Length: 212
Image (tube, rainbow, N blue to C red):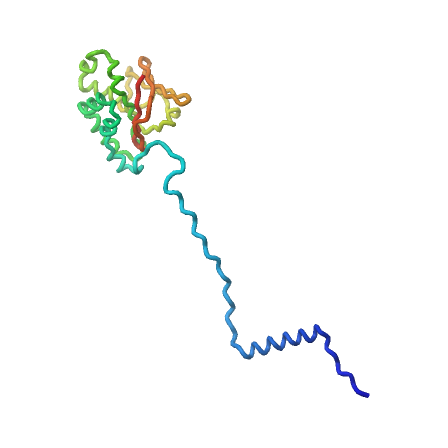
């Protein structure tokens, strides 16, 4: 009787075929180093906008102290075209030298100038300025300079009476600031005035126009 040859089932044949192929390839070719995983190319971060998206108050080209110290206060007032009397008084009393020196030495804080325009001076009694000594004129102007930088939105944070370059002595007129809504009122108890505009600001120096 003829013996039957064993028949390999399909799964067994497939398994042997895979094992044979793997052994043959391993003998014929050298071992290859495992392939390194492909690293995704990093996406560079989006470049920050070079200019603010929302416009802000006028500022100097740089907020650093050296550039601020180089600001020409008289030139700024002259360009505004309504501060001729103030400019003359600042020069004759040498207050401009004091302001420039303070800007040169300030590290933080700065100064704020409350600048009366020519129409404000015209409301004074005739001959009033001429009746003052140089020292009194200087003190009058110093009374219009706050010892720190104050932005247009920070007047409501001040504590009254506000400190000025004129200093504070018993019996001396005090400066009080009242801010409500978008209006800023300045009062000495006898004289009241209002800030009517921003002349200049650069984070260390602020000049505001005051007048009725």
